[in-house]
Length: 388
Image 1 (cartoon, helix red, strand yellow):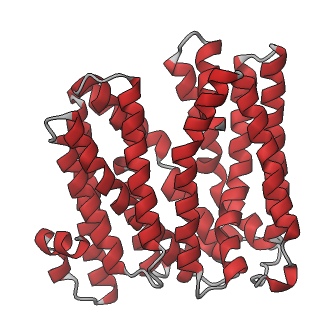
Image 2: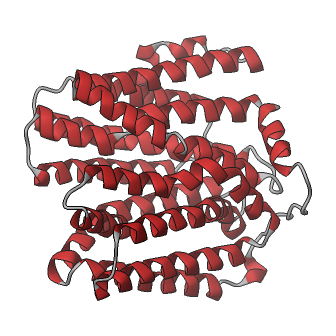
């Protein structure tokens, strides 16, 4: 709701400026690119439940401030820029803390299922949130969407407060010391299963996961549909992602084969979507893309946390979120430029090809680093068969 209302407010204040919209998004993601490792260090150093109560209260306060500014008619574009950047700073600490707090709630054995179910809830929000925001904005106005969002944080804080600390399984906290970020980088560098996974996540997330851009370009420039059809495409993709998250909840121990298979299959399906002759066929491919992509991202998250000790988990997840989200300021403009210069189909083909090639390259690196025989798993027909 916050994102839809914020975008709508920016367009209203700037009379439809796409550049202002891009600046707002960039400012919200910039702190993730700059400070993710420090956010992970904070998650390792302090009680996670307390951190989450603080970050959620601040995020709710930022939504309330923007809502009141919009309600009183005093909001200006620089207010939106500043509050978007501030929310990004909060997210830097909140994201790794929230990801690693799942382990403390359910224990390590059930962590993959908890992460997958969390992804399912997240994608339910992606389906319902924009629709609810649209209804609220249409019925009551943009300020109401911010105020409803601000009020919703109370439920999160109350839920955290009602938890019974005695039933949590907190990890040993890292003491304050110099060189903790270097320690995290050295920890990952010494473990091929972690650094190869992060290389794969970086290429898939940066060059393949740009559907907010490519779906809009395909809908508008290739299939010449309206805004309603574009929204339908986003819903179909999110529904596939929800199905993928629910399927991922069935897996206890995601392995390298699953990660490589889903990354390669995702790239192949993305290339296939670019070749679809009609909008409805394009939609038909978006659903399995959502399934495979969420299976991949959920497995990558689980594998990263399972492969990390408790005292290092926050910093490693900070690095994971850096490679997962930090490439967005690079990938999205690049994909948009390729789509504008060479056509949206080319941008989809390029993103899919890079993702598939990254899966093959990481498989080769793993085979050399770990001595694992993966040659048979690199055949495209075998990978697609395994995914099916």
